[in-house]
Length: 77
Image (cartoon, rainbow, N blue to C red; front, top):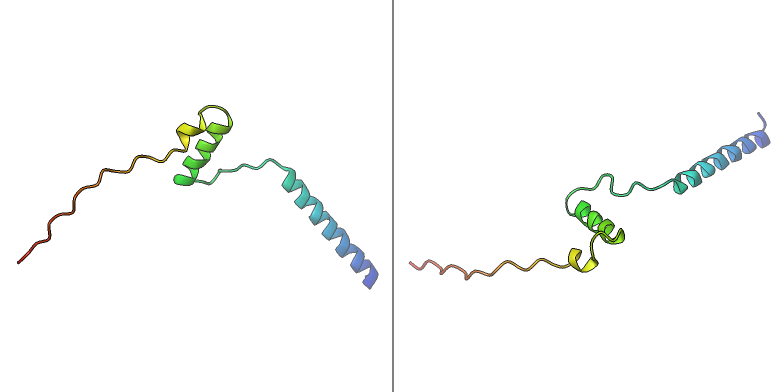
């Protein structure tokens, strides 16, 4: 195989790789497939708001902080 033929073969392989990557990028994204915990909860909340299932004000409010307790008195000897 001559150097020119090798170069053409390499270019063909590279073009195929680029086309494959473009096709992969156009495919639908399965976002959130591997999420868990807070990330999964957040994604579910975003989807609920986007679909109109829940109003944004009810989903993204911070929970009320827990009531504060006074610190115990230090032990004195």
